[in-house]
Image 1 (cartoon, rainbow, N blue to C red):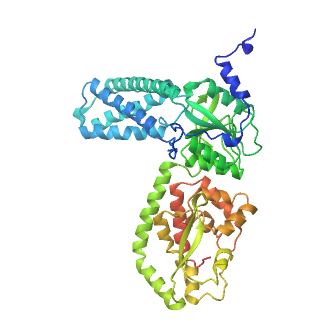
Image 2 (spheres, helix red, strand yellow):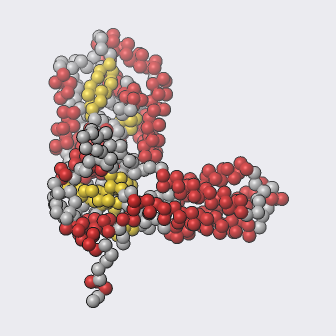
Image 3 (cartoon, rainbow, N blue to C red):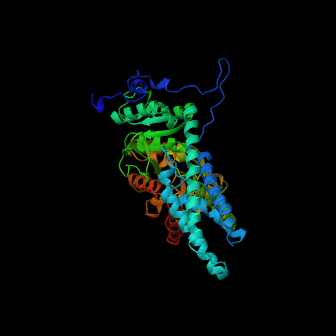
Amino acid sequence: MTTESVPAPHTTRATAATVAPAVPATTALHPPRGTRTGRAAAPPRIRHAGRRGPLAGLVAVDVLALVLTTALLPPLPWPVAAFALLALAQPLVYACRGLYRPTLSPSALYDAPALCGLALVQWFAVAEILTAHDPRHAVGWREPALAVLVQTALCCGGRALLHRARRRSAVRRPDSVLVVGRGPVAQQITAALYARPEYGMRPVGQVDTTAPAPDTGLPVLATRQDVGRAVIQNSVRHAVFAQPPGPDPEMTAVLSLLARHGCRLWLVDGGATTGNGWRRTVGHDHLWGFSVQPLRGGPHRPVARAVKRAIDTLVSALALAAAAPVLAVCALAVRIADGPGVIFRQERVGLDGRPFTLLKFRTLAPANEHESATRWNVAFDRRISATGSLLRRTSLDELPQLWNVLRGDMSLVGPRPERPYFVDRFSRVHPGYQARHRMPVGITGLAQIHGLRGDTSIEERARFDNHYIETWSPWRDVCILARTAASLFRLGGS
């Protein structure tokens, strides 16, 4: 008998996972835990994968190691304020180094070189600062070196205990996971997750939007609606991709949905870059021998998204206050030139396809609701007054949208919102158009600063919008706002 034919532990369970009978997609949605017969089930509470428990534990271990190191070593002549600053800065430095990155198979030994290197820089920097502050407080190289060794040992020991406790907890309370893709890799991933409970991941469905086939024995989820129901009803917290997600619009929508619900996304044996802007990060992680990397990118980065929303709120509030006289003058001009009804309201499609009411200064009164909803461009309509034409050319008619930004309907920067009639029409003609709604819509955007306004190519607009979403960052928003402000001096408009 060769080693290839020796049965592996838990072979029965793993094999059963791969040959289980197919289940229709409608039965993939298990009822929420904790419901009783005869009682109405309460709406399930989504447990976001980004919960702060693991991160808080690692930060606490590292800060405690710093405190213990300072307490165990001979007292250094530094003020309490300096120590407090060091304790606050340490988690930020460790986070930038990737020591708080989520992993499937965490190891304190793998973290040891990074922990030792950062401690080395930290303690020798402290020694140099003390010497520069007061030469009488100079210390030799032995004290910082001893501090580096003690702190590294304490950090590694604390992290090892924390990882062990989490593995035990994961066996008792596994998280629900979706396997995305098909083929032998998807089958082996499913079998490994069933056979190795220490990963704390329980497969509840297979996502296959191309050619659904139950090759893993799991219920197949073929549409974003199926995936959405499964995520909510099973409190799904992870999605493991058997191959890199391609540029298929349905898969793009599934990616956006999973990230929006806080699911952690993992890529197994994929390339360095996927086809829709979702990127792999660098690190050492595996799922029972499969090389695994977390998928990051796209619009769903919680910290950056919070920064974007904070900037939107602050800037729109300040802009509304500063532009109040301009708003009053524009409103008065519209009232005198075109009569009552200064503000024009129109339904537009925003984030995730949700409709909202967009506000503008009225530059043309449409003949009826049908014309308002379906007429594409009114730039050369003779019914536009001189006041309306000036407002459109200077983009002053867009100023009321700052209220939409303050309300949260829109962002300062993002894909321009469109009416439902045209969203439906363009989505059928241009495959990437629907993917624009992964991001909050905006007053200006990457397409607009490249001249794609008014009666221009929809395909090119969608291309620019999706490129912006996939490469978005707060700094890019600042650059687009700066270029938009510069373009206001060149009379244009849509």
